[in-house]
Each structure stands twice: as C-alpha cells, then as structure tokens.
Length: 121
Image 1 (cartoon, rainbow, N blue to C red):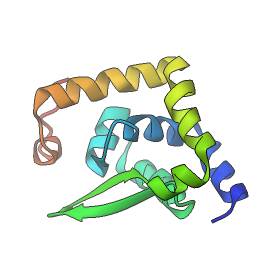
Image 2: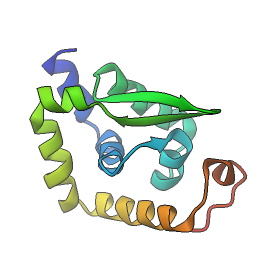
Image 3: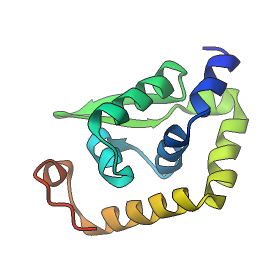
Image 4: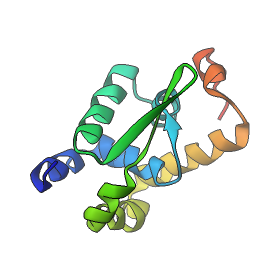
C-alpha cells in the first residue's frame, strides 16, 4: 500500500459515499448496495478498490461479507478519517445516504430481508 494507491482509491464519488456510510460502522455488501441504490457489480468493484488500498477490511458472518474501515490505515493516513468525518457531511449526496442508513437501521431489516426485496425505507 502506498499513498498514490490510497489517493486513487479516494478519487471517486461512490467510494467516498461508501466510506461515509462505513464511518458509522460495518455493513454488509447488500446493505451498501441498497442504501446507495447501486448494483452488486458496481458495489463490489468499488469495495475491491478500497480494499486493495487497505482502506477497508472485510470479514464473513454466515453467508454475508461485511466491510469496515481499516483502523491501521486510518492511523497511518489520518487525513482519510478527517475527510470522511468532516468533509462528507457537507455533501448533499452523503447527507442523503446517511438519512437512508438511519432509516435502514431503524427499520430492523436484515440482509436476508434485503435479499428478499423487503426494502421499506
């Protein structure tokens, strides 16, 4: 991992939106897809780019893959944390994404519900 790879990973609106969500805690791929209203292929492509830059790490729970911010990288490059904590809140699209995240969390829907198409937020 190097600074150039990190900067390239940050240079995309969708990836910034993903980081904006993940600053609030881990999420499953299907949750990210649903909240951002993007398809699985697009979501996976962006997650891989962020993971390859070590900005994200992933783990599996049952049949689902969850992503979270990589604390080690956040410590090594504190400007990333500053961007996602202080700058994304200024972006209208990120404000809308956070609103959808809040509604999703309040809905008590699960990944299984999302896969079954029970989106109600």
